[in-house]
Length: 404
Image (cartoon, rainbow, N blue to C red; front, side):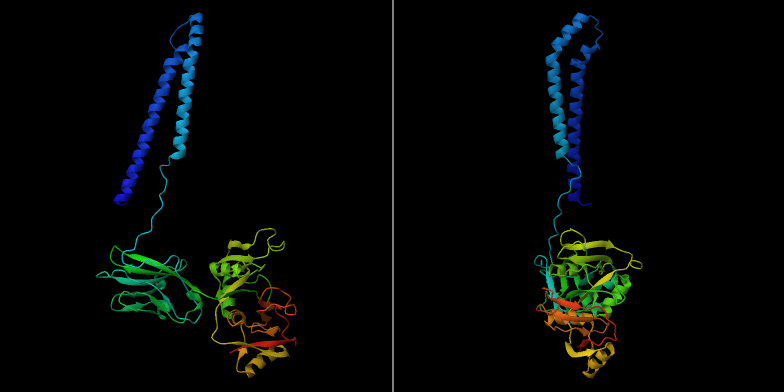
């Protein structure tokens, strides 16, 4: 406890002591009044003359009124005191004023897409004689050295972990400690801390990196609610994505994602987003993110909400009435392969890909992307990727979506 905290504690103790002293004084006052003016008229003085007691009781009336008045005032004071006094009341903590690092704008957020290069700003105001800069990714589920990206001093830096291999210091000038991240990946989304280490005067700032992307619901080909958490993670990875974070799911909901099946997200909780409330999707609850909370990652089973971002290649459609195997061959002849679900969503979102024909994808599902909704293309007024589910692979009805 520092001197300032001790002063606050001493002040609180003084206040409490003064209040107790006043309370004790008032209780003594009430007792004295009671003894002098009430007790003597109820046989406590040894008097036995009935007429004298009756006369004294008559004379007692104004005294009892004064006593009642004192009692009311006293109780009123106690009530007001107990309502206004709290010996444990907390004072709002003030953020530590930065001495060496430049205070960033409020809620700094840097945005980028998969494959981009971004800079996370960190500028020194004053350069100490001896210091280090440590960049860390703040990840509440994985604490330890693997969170450290880089430690540097004025002359050199040392990278750590998989992110560190893609990181370097920008060093645009002598006071620049900004972090340059190259070839962004989906998992780079999150909060980063730039910490100046200078003995006991360490200080830091936090920057948020947001990967721009799209969230898509994904279901097993065997039906609804078939994934435990680990299977959901694998399913998203196989479709060129990863499990979405809660913030990514929330942003997708604000952009119109409406899905009535619950799915795993990155932190092991289960949710589903509803834009248009309806009886079969949670009854009359208002629109929002419906939550089942944390679930058993090994035993509980749901669908998945996956997240992906821009792709380096492109998706294209081959017209035909193919079986699944014929669709595979059709893409191969074009020097490509059947597209993944995440690749089709990325093409729809970032390349504005619009195709009003169902086509096979690598996972055996049939889908088509719609940017400009129209009656003959699914009949749904919102843009999105429509699905026919997982038809029999011998069905000769659909074209092929290829990726290269």
